[in-house]
Amino acid sequence: MWTHKAWVGRFVARSLGAGERLRGYAGWCNAVEGNTTFYATPARETVTTWAGQTGADFRFLVKVPKVVSHERRLAGVEVEMRAFLDAVEPLGDRAVLWTQLPGSFGPSDVDALGRFLRRLPADRKRAVEVRHPGFFTDRGSTSLLERVLAAVDAEWVPFDTTVFFQAPPASEAAREAWARKPRLPRRMRALTDRPVVRYLGRDSFEETVEGWGPWTEVVAEWVREGRSPTVFLHTPDNHDAPALARRFHDDVRALVPDLDVLPEPEPVEPATLF
Image (cartoon, rainbow, N blue to C red; front, side, top):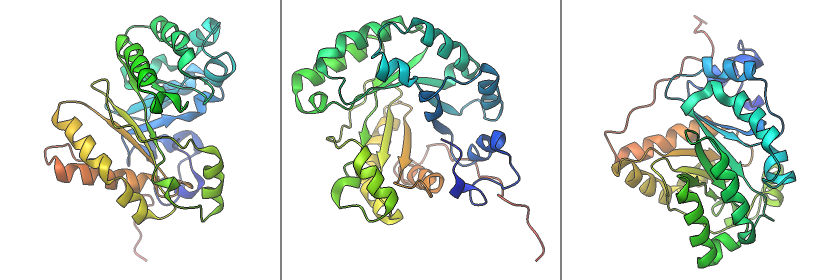
């Protein structure tokens, strides 16, 4: 996601059209979740413009289409996946193929996941997000999934909502998230050299920052180990997400001083005399 009404005039210049806002977003963050690909495979030409608006070190976590992961449950999806892979090819090795599975996709379905992942091109980075409680609460199911993912060098993407669910929602956006987001145990183990973390905080900027404390320690240790993590920060309304992302980077850099500094974003609007 790089287009948000609340970001226009704050993080993204008003002068940028909808088709150019990724360039503005990329001045604040160096990775993005490609959530729109879940609903429809974009035209290859559109993806080419995404590649052109971002630098060589900018990362895309592109979600596998819903028809593949949810409707067909990874079976009989050759045509759809060929179209999807062709569409995102302009992103090259900057793209991670993100398969987000429904809560009904459980340990008994792991064989289907393994077959699907093995059929993906070997040079494609892969990441999987599961939401069935069994993967988190049953050691055998956890180990089974880890073995299947490790066999194809795929990462397990945790979606940490524990801080969000610590207190009842206090806004309309939070109430909507309360009904929709998964409530699962926190997972903090990486399987590959490129971990991916998704974190959902609260309406309060301060509570969100305080809640991610355990992650700054873990991510800092991953960096020390030579891994290259990507972390996505969310709140119920996402109004401050770009600023939160930079704050998280600053917190990790305080623990790992040699971590690269993020570039300064360009001014959102031209400076004036008055």
